[in-house]
Length: 425
Image (tube, rainbow, N blue to C red; front, side, top):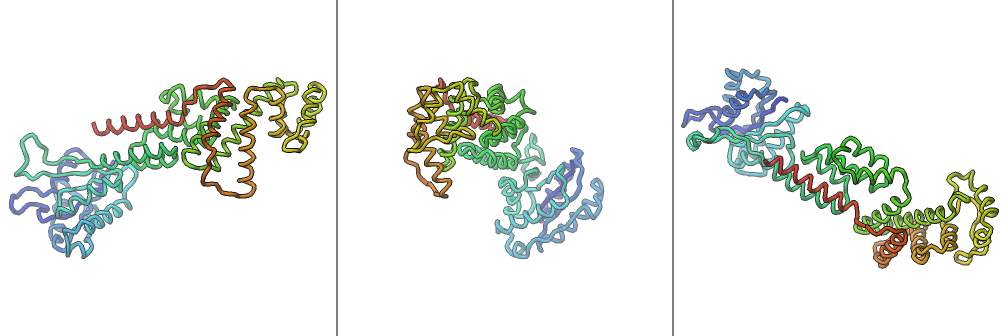
């Protein structure tokens, strides 16, 4: 890991005329050499009033003990506006940012930017800390050099001051809000930019994003490398979903519906309701038929299904022939439709029939929104819909409806705050 040093040049560089002590740039360079830090480049930003000091500093750093080649010490004149107004904070920040951009052109991912916050005018010194706190220089160290006349015996002349922690605390709050909105992908981007990312935290966020997107295989793959650390719950739940366990899928559709409703995505909410409804109908119909006949999984099996149903379940077959859905006969060919499975569940007299009829009307409404390209910004019956879904789940024997995404959010937040605390310590 090599260092790229950035600093404004002050009137006390390279050596103070009043104290005859090293200025802050030379003091910082001595410290870096003492800790055996390789120096790749030094970028010195100077005003018209400090050009001479910049040239003297360059020459000083070319001599022992530094012996840097002249090409490794770049002199950057700042904007003339800053030279004319060296107490202008905005201009100082712009100049510091230009220096950082120049450093990035030669930096590798392994390099560190070492920022000297003790040379130049007060606003120039502050500029580096502002950039670091804003997250503009993520892989950097902010250095301060004490005045030797004010330095106490137990104090170091050169010390590091990391104001990036302020930015990280802000990022943690942003991530917490993104988690409350179930925006796992956005939270993952924020986490990586904050410098707080760990393989486990990134795995959990990727897991949440993929699971919420119903991409269960990728969600399982996201936490596989950190399986020993994520806990049994997330692994067992995603295994059931990846294996298409019917009950797990029904619950997941309900939880997804809650998330869409929380974010006021009413059209997507109705899609989740429809998925929930179809999963329940398919599961109950398959349970009642018990393989006599089995619901077809491929189109080639559909003809055999209807023939077998007529021979093995004549009473049910006659019920389906007489059944009317919105005044129309059922289509008794191809894959069993939603109305067909609804009719089978009604014939089986399952206790969830009444609630499923209500949900059937909602699914019809969802189809209208999709096929007629109608928008929806309010849904008055949303809470009643959730209540109906809970009635169906209760009829299936499912009563623990703790939203796993809320639990996941809490775990991520706690792990993130603990990681931040470790960094502060």
